[in-house]
Length: 447
Image (cartoon, rainbow, N blue to C red; front, side, top):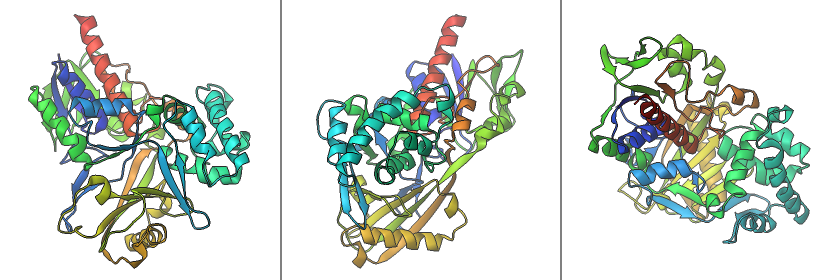
């Protein structure tokens, strides 16, 4: 059995490594100079540090992505803790949503009941709302499926402060969009899996290595060690179809034949290279994306505070102390600090000058982190990931296609496909594993 996987991001590497593990002949073709897609790292020229193109966070319920890491020998390279999320504002300072080591769902209930940003009445109401959100919006197929997060929370009688301090940060972090625009069904999926499922699912994890070192290059080595081929700078021109069956792809004038083809690329690329029968399943609406802007600050001295922190009223929403999380320094960061600042759903910042964005991030870090007000900025890097994730709007969710289409032996994968999850690392890995399992099943059926 031979498989061509087009795309070397999380979905493509999950599919390819799963197939290579089963003894399949795998070829991965990636158009970019390096693997990783929208979850990658690169060497920053001024400092020499390896920088992620955006800070990623995981949870214990990311079973598929964690399975990918375990397969390639990287499961232990994660910073991991019980769910303990510090959230800061100027009025109340830092309050923590900290869930103790109790059986589920008591751990989440105990965490919410001690959450200092809410009154006692708001805490009780939030607990009821969490269950009601999953029950009413989690698997809805009727009118409730069109609700936004903001509409659902209003229907569940959540106060403005509960939305501001609890539900909105969760929505921004997991759906990458304003609650007024994001699908309530997707938030319900997050709450059900991460907060109301097994306690292990609520554990908070951060990559302790740059993303390319965490999974992309180890996945390449895993595939190649089992006889597979991984090519970068190898754009695919078209999928080759013969008799309503995909027989391979054409890349740079070369015909690469295979038993199955997996397209693990974003919708615009699918629409460009796929046959017309498949393009019809990927409407232009699926090209609608939401951006993320990340700012990395190199400061001249160490700063205090938690390893990561949410800002309730900040323009930057999350701060991560990358030097602490990665537990590594070099000449540029010795005796200093490196902080990653993230703004999700950052359409308003795409046209804003990078100098202004860096100044905002520095000002907000100085307000929230101990000692940062006295630190001097050594260097700043602003990254604008314009098409970071599929837009999580309710009207888009029914359009997300499954892995199979009308062309035999041609499969789709990607965080934007119909996984039932927002476009996360977990959604990408899940889609890749599903495509790999289907390719194996097709091969067995044909035999």
